[in-house]
Structures are given as structure tokens and as C-alpha cells.
Amino acid sequence: MQEVDEREECGMYFIPHLGVYRSDKKTSKLRVVLNASSATTNGYSLNSLQYNGGVAQNDLFLIMVRFRKHIFAFIADVQKMYRMIWINPDQRKLQRILWRENMDEPIKTFELSTVTYGTTSAPFLATRTLKQLALDEAGNFPLGSSVVMSDVYIDDVLTGAETLLEAKELKNKLINIFAKGGMVLHKWCGNNTELIEVSENYDFSDSSEIKVLGVYWNPKHDCFSFRVKIDLHELNTKRDVLSTIARIYDPLGLLGAVVAKAKIFLQKLWMLKIDWTDLLPDTINREWRQFVESLQVVNDININRCIVVEQPEVIELHGFSDASQSAYGAVVYCKSITSDGRMLVHLIASKSRVAPTKQTTIPRLELCAAVLLAKLVHRVKQALKLNVTNTFLWSDSMIVLSWIRKESYKLKPLWLTGLLQSREMTSSEQWRYVATEDNPADFVSRGMDSLKLKTCELWWNGPKFLMSNQYPQ
Image (tube, rainbow, N blue to C red; front, side):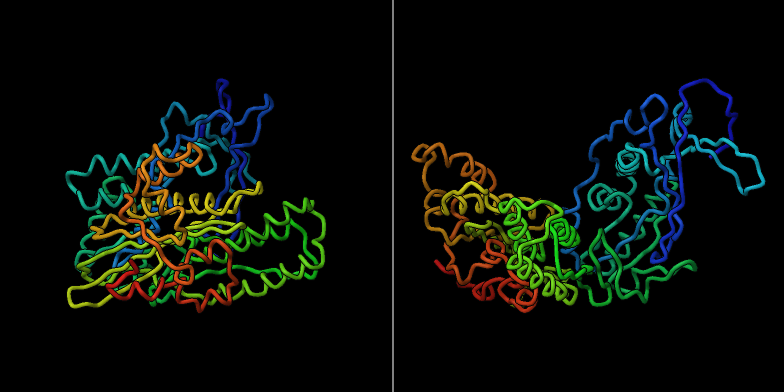
């Protein structure tokens, strides 16, 4: 920032600011927070007059799924990214602040010269600048450019490679491409010590856990985990229920069966028309307390980050869908096989939706689940960017499977929209029948307690027949 003469023409804006101290942070414990939503005397604020610019990067789901395909994985973030990007000098008068070093000095006026955290346009301006950097340097650093375009979320880099040599080369390319934009990557962390850099300010080489886009990653054991803070009350309101559910941050749906149970419970409260501050009826309250008590087990669950075996010769995606009167959902697994027959099957992601309050038929809900599965598999393929050998989609509804195989003109218009959506992303040959007892999507359609989920092999690794080459016909 630079000091300016406060007696200037109109068209200025002064941003209120304060310091926020976070003792739990390893770095940047004191952070400046600016409130560009603060209204002026005419009722407008800087944020109320700005566009947010839209999205310039891949969404979080795609980046997190892709992060799971690398044998050697590492993360880093751009040091003070917003402050590395200039704002047009003509616009800086809209980023003024009042400041003094100590209480004895007079208050001075300064203009912030760079992209400022707290303004509506800041995320777009910063991410679009990174995209432009990748485009400009694509000729010099093609490998680094592709990562900046696809594996960066705001200022976090999540990427990796199949071999350690490739990962180290990629790391150097990223350092160089960001240096071209005057930026520095720091807070390096990886599942191999050679991918970690030790700084005098902080050292992540011995860190047992680090937060990766809201999910905890243990690089030493290369697994994801969750840290859900539980407040157990004797009596609960609908607001308490929603507050607890909101703490389960699970962008990939790895805890999909638990989250589905919470969603079903919350819908039940809506149907009872309980107000936000009303205490839950005794039977409902007991049910909720049992769920919350079991929820603490979530913090003991560890999930492998990597979903593929080293040097796979065959990669298959297996998706499962199911529905009940309460909810419907989809689950996707990756099966990878090496040339010598080593095999690995891991859960990639899941999605669930509560059923509409207006009662509908199970076949219609099963069709909704099939469409949800088609969309989820499409997004997983888009994220992984792997050479997928085969894709199998499984449902335990013979009615839906027969609908999928029928010609469109033979179906009622009521079903056409969903079927056409599924057919755009899948082929009828990919769909197969699976018995209900072998269908892991059954857990997202009915919900499950954390205690059972922790030890449920069917959920984490899919049905046993996936570990063979003989699938049900």
C-alpha cells in the first residue's frame, strides 16, 4: 500500500479493517480482515457494486478426486497470492484504508495496491490471473501449465505423479512457472520426504495431519480422516441438529451413508413442522442423541487417499445406485489391476438425495438414483483423466434396467427426461443387475450409523465379486 493525500476528488471508498488472531494456525496467526461490504452514507458498499466474475478454476470435487489417482502426491500453496497481483492504478482509490503505526501518530490515508481479500471480485481476479499465467507460459512449461489450469483451487495446489522422478520434476516446473508470475509456493507437504521442503518458519516434514481443502490428510500414512466436533446436549432443537450436520464436511461423500442418515432425520423434522427453537419430542430426541453419540466414531475412520495400484494395466469404474422411500443415492468405485494380477478396489465418491416429501413410486426413485449415478460417473471420469478400460453401472431394480434398454418412443413422457439424461452419459450395455445384499448404494438410500460404517467392507471396497473377474450376469 502507499500513503496518499486524503483530500482528493470524490469516488473514493474506505474499507474498515481489523485483525483476527488464530492460535491454532501454524502460519499467519494474525490475519488482516477487510470488510468491503460496509455501506457508505449513500447506502452502497464496494462489494455491492462489484461482479464476482464467476468461476475460473475446476471445482473442488474434481480436484479432490484427481488428487486420489497419484501414487506420489504433494500439496503446496501460493504465498500471499492476492498480494502478488496489482490492481489497476485508476481503481486503487476504491481500496483506501485509515492506518497509523501507534496511538501517538496521526491517522494517515493509504491505498491498497493489490488484490484485496474481502472484496467480491478478489477470488476471480486472483484465479483468472493464475489461468492467464498458465496460458502465457504453456510453451515454456507445458507440464506445469496443465497443473495450474486443472489442479489448483484458489491458492492451493494438489497434484502428483505416478513415479517419484516425475513428481520431483513436476514440483520444479511448478516452482518455475509461479516464479514467472512473481509468486512463491510454500507449505510443501507430500507422501514422500523428497517432495517436502523445510522452511525456517514452519516445518511440515513431521506433521501427522494437514488440512487439504477442508479434509484432513496424513501424508505419512497417506490417508484421509475427519475431525467432527460433537456437542452432546440432553435436549436439542432443530437448529442444534442442523448445526451438527453442517460440521460434517465431506466433499467426496466418503461418509455418504452417515450423511444420508442425517439428511433423512432432518427431513423428518421438516415434516413434523418443528420450529428452529422448539425442543425435539422425546422419541425423536433420543434417536438424535444416539446418532450424535455414534458420530464420534467418524474421527477414528482412516481412508486411503490413493485409489489405484502402481502401474495398472486395467482400470475399471463400478457404479451402484439404489433408492428407498426415504432417499436415493449412488456410489462409485475404482478397480485397478496390474499385469501380474495384483488388484485394488477403493471407494471414490458417493452422492445422496432425500426423496421428495410428495410420495412417489419406488421405480421412479430408482430411476432418479440411476440418473444420479450416470452424472456421478461422468464427473469422476472427467476428474480422473485415466484410461478407463471398462465402466459398469449396477442397479437392483429390474424395472429401471428394462426402461434403460427400451427405445425412447415406447416409454411414457413421464420417464423420458431422466432416461435421456442417463443415456447422454452412459450406454445401455454398461448397466447390469446386482442383488440388493451386494449393493453398497443401499447404505446411502437408507443411511447408516458411523459405528457400522467404520467396519463395513461392502461400503469401503464394494461387493466381493469385484475382487474376481467373474461378475454376475
